[in-house]
Each structure stands twice: as structure tokens, then as C-alpha cells.
Length: 159
Image (tube, rainbow, N blue to C red; front, side, top):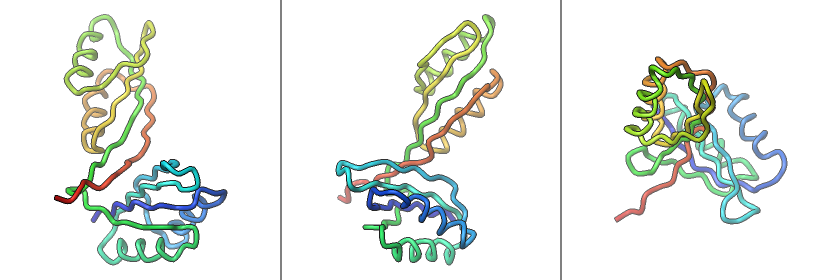
């Protein structure tokens, strides 16, 4: 089972360490962690994706709510939120497969942000499963380097 947590925390030193320490001490797994400041400079937003059984996911939520620097914890359902991840990938290419790589980027909606004589840096943002799919499709070109942000998530408006 996947647990997606949107956590608002006080933007101050040591908060990220406290949250990650909570996961480490209790042997909870972090599949993805993204942190950034919100529209308010004194508050940061964390998106934490974890996996485990129902009991584990419930325990994570309870432990997050006990932390002093945590302002609010929301558990989000994948079907009721916008879940995106960004990735940068450096891919090698040759004159024979260059057009195929450009076509793949075009079809998938990826953006080529840097080109050199033998490689390209590609930016892609989408749902995590689409990012995985793009990585698999690009593997045959020769992935030299890969950086992923981890998922960020926001609930959709309830109608």
C-alpha cells in the first residue's frame, strides 16, 4: 500500500532531520521525499511517499502528527490529487539515433534543455509512473546521468 502525505512544517533548521529521523528510528521506508518553501516563507511543504501495510501507513500519520514542528498532516489518495515528479536525464546519442531521441522527447512531452556533440540533457515532469516509463524508453540510448526530484502532490478541488 502506498501512503502519500502532504505535511506542512515550520521552516526552520533541523525539521527535515527530525522527520527523516522519525522514519529511520521506526524503520519506515521513504520512497520519495520532496521539500520546499510555500507561499509563506515561515512554512515549508513536504511530500512524503511511503509504502507499507495499512497499519504502517496509519502509524506514519500518527507519528508525523506528534511532531512539534509539524503544522498539518494530510493523507492524500492518488486518484484525488495531482501527483508529479520532475527528472533531468543526460543521454548519449549518435548521428544515427539522434532523430529517434528527439522524436521520443516530442511524443512524451519532454524538453531538451542542453545539447552537446554527444549527449543531451532532457527535462521531463509527469506522474511518477510516466517518469519510469520514459526512463525505460530512453535506456536504449544510453543514460549517462539521472536526477529525480521525488513526487510533489496537491489535492484536487472537491466538487
